[in-house]
Length: 458
Image (cartoon, rainbow, N blue to C red):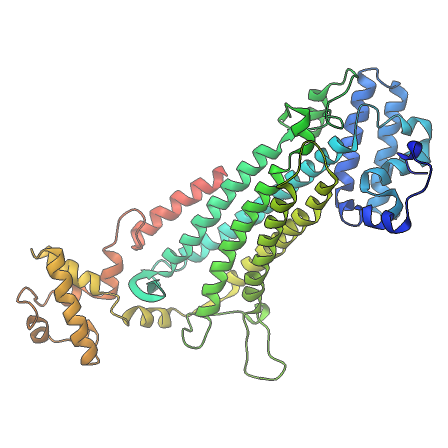
């Protein structure tokens, strides 16, 4: 008979057992369930709600069960429904009536709310460490490419010259914001719901603060209805994970483009590439493509969570069992993607000559040509028009701006002089942007140092 079967006269259909069971996926929380139960049993004994000797026996036996699970000696049962009932059955099979006292002053509703918070707190900290490792790899890559000039783009059209360091650190800033979001999500999941009961707490004199301290929570939840029915923390984490994947996907898209023969800005290491079953010459950026593809999967999990929760009345509803597969998969996917992405970017070859050549084409120095005229006293809009006409002329002559003669420059304005060539050199275009946020080497060095200090605070 099931642990809750006293009111029932018939056994559940085998198909219902299978349909209703969640142990296939919520087994992931076995450790959290056991640790939560140990803290609960200690509190029950401390408060005199159950005999102290039973409390001690429960805690000791649960630790034995934990070790047996981790040694692979336990097979969870579908008809025991979920990880919570599986562990309670293992406990009662071992110690009988003493084990049956564990569930005093507790419901599966607040038990599962506790377990998932504990599990996601742990996973959030692991993802944070992965992101920090990636950030350090990006900083290292940037420091090695402070003078690697490349074209910057808007609308996927060449715009102005920047450096590879400048480009890389843009993504580092994105991931730093992701770390901030993970911190925020962690803060809101760090509230202990056990003691909420099914929905209305309990009549037993429990000590919720004791349990919270035992389990490393900063505080307890303030409303029992909300305590069992809140899944905002899972949705918020899924949102943060979706944004992380969006950033990884954007970066992957650029790496895919840059590794094409047309760009040849980077080349993926053989250890992070695959080949073709038919075309011998192929070297495919499959790691980047898979990360880009898996982003949609994490987005889907977020939408699934939001959709499950959108119409639920208070308090707990069985629909909420559907929260776990979605958030577990989102967590697992992100944890799979970040380390492999770090390995890919750390090992790829940077083709600096091709980047420099790319920065020289497409009139990326046109803005600097206009700025040159402005510094000579010409109004910006007039300067903009002059350089626009010069660009059109240079295109017709199949030349770059720096390939035009001084006489050709002077056809458009007498303001031009020999110093124009220095002003529009790609290196000058980069080095003169020596302000906070700019690509100049000195500016980037300061930015990186500031970034590293901020990263240490996360």
